[in-house]
Length: 308
Image (cartoon, rainbow, N blue to C red; front, side):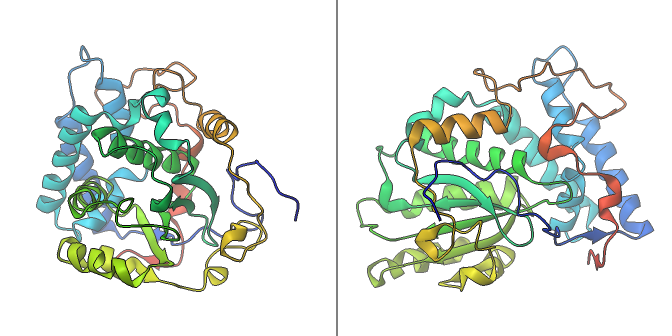
């Protein structure tokens, strides 16, 4: 295929979204109770973050994800979602201005491009392309990328794939165990049920100690989703798989083109808000206008996989 700078922001034609969850009456009742509790914690309307907080609570995937993560224990679900609400108020992950983190993207060390066979957006992580000194901005860039991958999720999809390529990674460029712990904390506590697959390829023997070091901080759910050197052709359509990994997608990274395409596809304004005005949501919890990733229709929840 011809080399291209075009970023893939939609799944391959004919992709069937998976997994699809269905919920029984008891589970639906618990989700309603959790949403009521989350709304009771919401900031007052006078707070500038009020509408954004309601926007997140009202996303069709938020409450189901937290109840599944809590294994349908309502009290545990309340603790989990309250913790994330407080984290989001402080971190404001949905309002990170693009220019704040843009420099972190300039080598392509983290690239959102393409989808797997189940319609999950793919985040490619290449530690060998590290271009900045360790700082809080690196983590904010990663969170910004998580938010953009969620923006690109097709209707019905609630998870993403992370593919870590250790080609050319050295001890100098590899993240420290403390950074890895912080990343795991954010993923496992504030993006619950969002990691669908975590794939690691080209891991040198020299860095085996790194995974031994972070292993104690991996919860069983995350550990179960990790695969080392899998056959990527079984998981990603060839036309969506980067040619570096045996696919037909001859993507050539160019920093300006890549950044502009992601910002445009996700409709991100310079101040981190969305291109259109955000309407207020009533205290009763009426849903805000949904964007590209948020048009997850309720009927998409009727499928063959039943939440346990």
